[in-house]
Length: 258
Image (cartoon, rainbow, N blue to C red):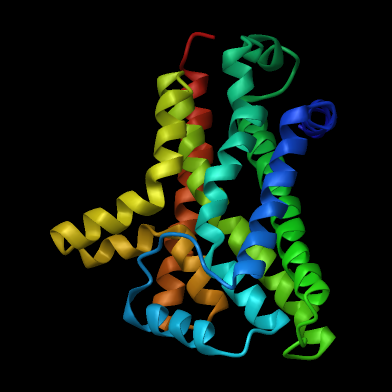
């Protein structure tokens, strides 16, 4: 599995697509900070919407920019679909899956390795996103809004929370890719997931669907708009989805003809 992860990172270092993705991610951070705006879709509810209004009404500091960056985090899913395609989608589009699975790696190691690679990629990209927001705020001459120790802690917590929550949606894409052997269906589901959950919940008044708004979960945790009992439910559902997706994908691929 370790060798597979190393091979994936080696291919990425030689990929122009990852460079373009990095530039696009940093550009989103710059635009969000420069325009003092938030972009993205979530089902965070009234308390979350009120928190965003508070942020927008404040004197804009570097910390305010980081909080606005969290509120815009759902937009990152539209960029990170490229990570999914490059890391695991290419195994199908380039017909290299059989070679990979016959190289001595088990099915569960293959899926775990791919998920780990995607998660690490997302963490690094998201870290660059928040660091870009911080540096842009500095360049614009804005006040820190908190001590530098707190700002560094904010960046770390924001990066890990947002990255994991986005990876939950990506894990759904993995099992759909294994199940359908098509890049189109999982790619579409990953891209529309935040918006789809919000629309279905609103249209059919299904309040429990909010626990499937994984990106919204990360945003609300960081902005402290979730009650403790709800946070545990969100966390349990998110972890459960990842586990089901990983082990389900391994089970499905073990029964498929490669």
